[in-house]
Length: 351
Image (cartoon, rainbow, N blue to C red; front, top):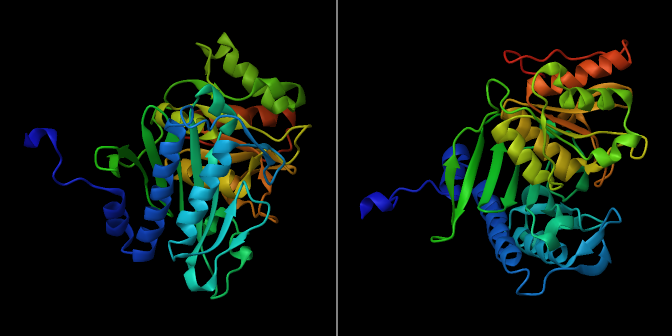
């Protein structure tokens, strides 16, 4: 009997306490985990509970809100506000930041996308939650505490709702770890230790929405054509889910590159910096990968270095293993020889 049960499970709360000795961070992660369990239940019962379809509203950036978007957002806000450790919340679904009442206020500021990939909900494709955590710099709640670069981010993570429910997160300057929701005990249990990109680059996979290719610059066009070409050996496989959490999770585990660049249609990129770009960049870099903007505002930059001016600012993204991101960088160099290109290899971390 004992062989079938773990009497010493490394749960999420236990791991956070052992890693940080920060009781308030344990409470925060427990609140995030609780909201994600509630979202799991809603996603799994969406058809039965008639949660498919539009809610009849739009979010902060003008996208149509699904019923599950609104419900997931309420679940996260309620859990975080009542945790007693948050001062400011920013959600993709709310145009304005949420300032927590002083009686419930704590030291953390949290930005989140409660249900990433919600356009896939009605066809039962994987969706996820993304979050980034900052510490307040003063006693008063101030949204400026979130308008800082990713270098100030203390914790970032995502949750994938699929065949299993998996939370992946990292603390600043620590490894990336995965926790699977065990429904029999209602806890996230440590299942992936120190997640890293494959040392040899892993599978040759490129992930992008080629429907936007008419708007791309020559660097991105050239890189994608090389990925599809037999000139580099066996052509890369194309894999694009359209849910950032699913595409990034696969990229970390299998290798490859995820591309959502700035282009003529969206010169500042499409993904939101605070609750998509920065948290995913922090995870990617600490898993040994590269999180770049690609060519953005005249130069190649790290996503982590970008400073948002507004809470819903957007950014372009080139994220993946060093082998494959280097292909993109090389094509930028072919496009314009004056562009300063970082040289990536398996022995050098791009800082």
